[in-house]
Amino acid sequence: MRVIAGSARRLKLSTPRGLKTRPTQDRVKETLFNMLQNDVDGAYFLDLFAGSGQMGIEALSRGARAACFVDQSREALICIRENLVRCRLEKRARVIASDVLSALALWDRRNLPDIVFMDPPYGQDLEENVLRELRNLLDINAIIIIEASLNSDFSYATSLGYQIDRIKRYKTNQHVFLSLE
Image (cartoon, rainbow, N blue to C red; front, side, top):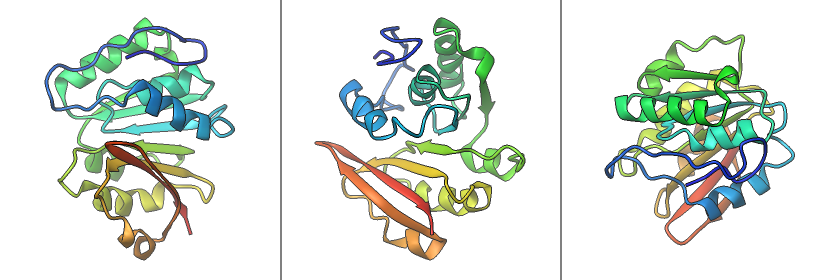
């Protein structure tokens, strides 16, 4: 796994061992950031269930002004910090050691994210609770991207005040793009 573009281009990233995290494949990450290319520069990027931190690091490398990484796994947090140092991006990053819902409940509402990326564990139905908590932390122009299994259903999103702007399907997963209604 590596950084694809920007200031940290081609630098290799480490990932937590085991099967608890699913690093996004480079070609899928490249497709996603090509879709976001006009939105990342100068954005505040929030990487939830961050794992290795590769998505937030890619955003920082491509010009995001800052990124916040949230994960509760000790191994993931070590990995994120090592990757940030390796890429020389730690000064523009904040790492929160917490479960996502607790981190969002304590969020400083003076520092709203422009782009939120979340890749929660599959099959635990965490997305709806996270979207409910995120609702009050977003500017009207915020972009939310959820990496999910192909069979995940987001029909409840409208009842939470979101609209589905786009769904990009891949062989094994999908990216669901949401915004506030």
